[in-house]
Image 1 (cartoon, one colour):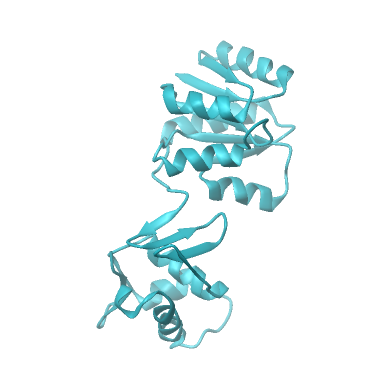
Image 2 (cartoon, helix red, strand yellow):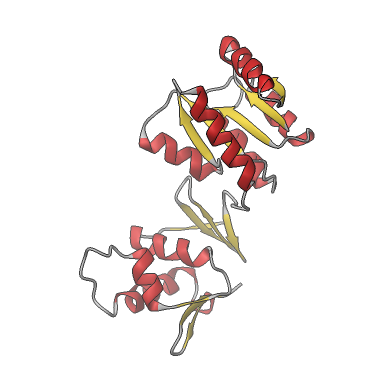
Length: 218
């Protein structure tokens, strides 16, 4: 299998090339964000190991651009940034896994093998349904290019519905996935927030399916 390693630390890049080559992989190395992006666009790779802090273009931006172009190359991010929000940013941008430096080479190999086994699911970095766009990394929603300001609960509700466009989603399912199960939630909470959301995205976009639930129109 052919791998692309995008890493600007010369020693680490060389060590990864040696180690992965010894495991039977064909390895190409790029040292900057733009070079890595160009290689990923034009090369036939089975997976990419991508550093976050890169010259020219961050790893976050590299993977965001690839996903925006509908390129689903599996991406394992490497970073010295070990905060939970840093990891969340990487995954929200479209990376498939995130490993912090310093890392165990054995763990890196195991995660890489797991990534190659399952491939990259089609998980667009930006959700789009009709003229609605939801960007999880920026927590930004637009309708026909105009920004829609949502509360945290409205955002969570729309996010869940946009991942199931055209499907009927029951009130029970929404309560289970959008509301905190440990908190006693009023039975009409879903109806209330669906009403709030309709006023912001358009009543015609969120349909009521009597006796079944709600459907986000495509």
